[in-house]
Image (cartoon, rainbow, N blue to C red; front, side, top):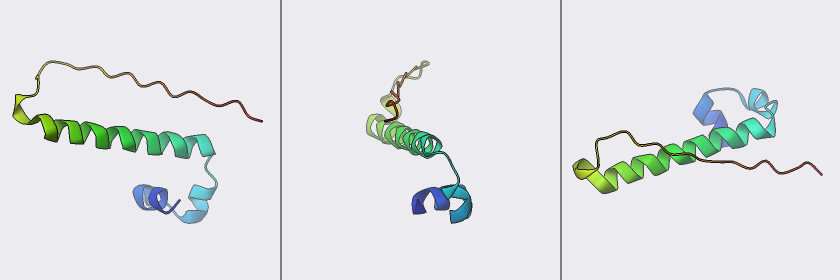
Length: 64
């Protein structure tokens, strides 16, 4: 939770009130941004300049 508190600037009490799915979604989005940044650094200026589309599917587990 510390990472989410630091990322959002909200209090720990406020973040504890979030739905778990919202926390997971935020962390997944951050992970995607990190991957994109690493990819851009790896490919450098030679990377294609045209539009690129990435589709990510997150599957929701059924509640027990």
